[in-house]
Amino acid sequence: MTEALASEEMSSDEAAAAASSCGRDFRANPYPVYATLRATAPVCPLSPPHGVETYLITRYDDARAALADPRLSKDMYGAIDAYQRIFGDSSIALDDNMLFSDPPKHTRLRRIVGSTFTPKRVESLRPRVREITEELLDRCSASGPVDLLPEFCFPLPLVVICELLGVPENERKQAHAWSSTVARTGFGPEARKALEVAEGNLRDYLVDLIARKRQEPDGGLLSALVTAQDQDGALTDHELVSTAWVLLFAGHKSTAYQIGNAVHHLLAQPEQKRLALQGPAAMASAIEEIFRFETSVENSTFRYAKEDLVIRDTLIPKGTLVQISIAAANRDPEAFPHPDRMDVKRPNVQAEHLTFGVGPHYCIGAPLARLEMQIALTTLFERYPDMALAEAPEDARWLTVPFPAFRGLAELPVILDPS
Image (tube, rainbow, N blue to C red):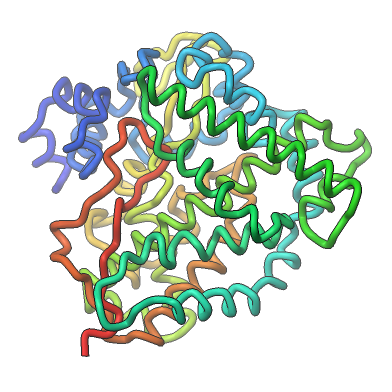
């Protein structure tokens, strides 16, 4: 849908209402709404289900600037009333990390984590990631339909991040279940209670796991974080727990959904799949285009305005929460010609898409996500070159939980070997 067509078919008020309500139709396909908002209300006040007014930024240039704007704070303690109204008290103990902080605290936390979560450590995982990929595919039925999400897309990054952190194998299933509750929980009393229970269990588990790493260090990342420090000292106990949480949660959920999105779109567009499989460089380029075209991180985490600021002639009052739509920005025709078409040969897309953010909060896990994506997709399609979707592409079921953390499929039924 073009920007002009979107604005003709839907008014800005209708688009704002759709984005605010987070209804099933919007969750299943938000892009027409985003196109209308980009064209008619690029900085749009919303009233989402959590009841806290936010401003949504949808244009690429505005989003890129906002992601690095120091006037938009990531420290949610500065907007604690709004934060608690949305997430309750249970999330606070898990959000004392670099994702939810500003300099100088953010600088210190990122420096400590970066000293342990190094590109060299990530690259050393390549043989093991390939081995895990093969093991998971060995377990999948090749003859009948299989849902790749629980059988492949989720276990791969989960096993990788758990092995990287040093989470014992017999404890991973429960950690994954708690994380899934957090990722899929919407709003309302029952949902809030489920969120509080899952986050409380995760917090208690990580406290215990860190205590065990202190007693019996191993070669994992969590042990390294326990002992890591810089000139300002080591991570506090709260920071350790919260950092372990964000690495575990963000380290597998976003990649799992992104692998699923990639498989779905490549199978739905055979010519694009053929071009992507022409070699490692072609696959690397295709992955960057998929990050742009169907990112699993639909919106940035919350920021709030530290002062009154004006974007696109719209006043965002001091203290107001702001969200940046990564998915909308990545489909902006001002930045990407024909943005609603997946083009795995699109030039310069890695340097331009916003899936991993920009500026100080650029995703520290980007190298790991790229490595896992490349190995997963290359191995999967080499092993099953004739793999096909078990249902028509237009029948795909996307996550429809109100205000979810991720953009991804609810299931991905495929036939690995149609012969």
